[in-house]
Image (tube, rainbow, N blue to C red; front, side):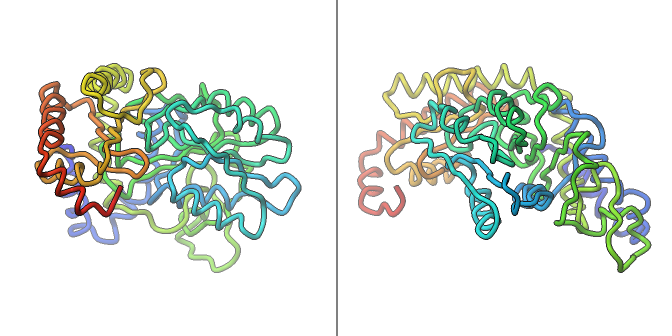
Length: 368
């Protein structure tokens, strides 16, 4: 957490205490646009094309609500390696209308887009794909996917949650239709501050049914009739935003902008290469592409009983996480030192060399 988050959180509580309802007119009403523009800057998107949302699932639901799945072009294409929350959403949303085609990816670290490209046809309405896959940190060839989708008249929703902040993303160069992501991971912003990008030329063409009072052209009229939608990014808002999260995510966005994502990417490759080489030298299994051009900012060590080892590392204040089918995920960022990387590898080595601990894990393991 950036140190300045304390000050920004205090700004929120102070204006709430001192200005009360006046805070809406003075600051809070425009906060989603202000923070959205900070996110836009990091991915070369125009101003007023990004809104802040509570989470990525809600952001994608807003997009789904813009489309009619009763027509002949009603297919959505995804891969089975997406974050499960989105798979849950799409399966439920399309269970009565539309068609969902989920492409199986047996080798996520050497992901081939051939099956996905073949599935994108004249019946495809949307393609929902991650830029970087959350388990393996594999970078997906999204340029090829976007080109194929656009060639048949389909639109693409790009999830940049696992990339933006450590892998360069350029919305205008990609010409992607929509993007979603969050500040929680690489943008150092904490939970509750996710975002939705809608390409400029699509904003007025789409009418979200998942809507609310912030999307009204005159919200403070409190009109009980049919909504008259505003223009710009706020067209894709709905209910009252998560104001505290919009304060606390800003220091991270400012820091990432100051450091620069290109510089972060260079440093990230150095660190993930070190972690992969450490695994290769020790014969540790890794679930991450060796080729740095195809690798995001995370390295996954896929040990047996990785969950128990990850739990022990966290107990010892080596902060990692665990994901089924991937193992222990290490995600160094620009502030991580070489000494911290070395100490983490040595601590894993110490745990693995403790035969009594491993026997204990074997006898009590409930998660594999």
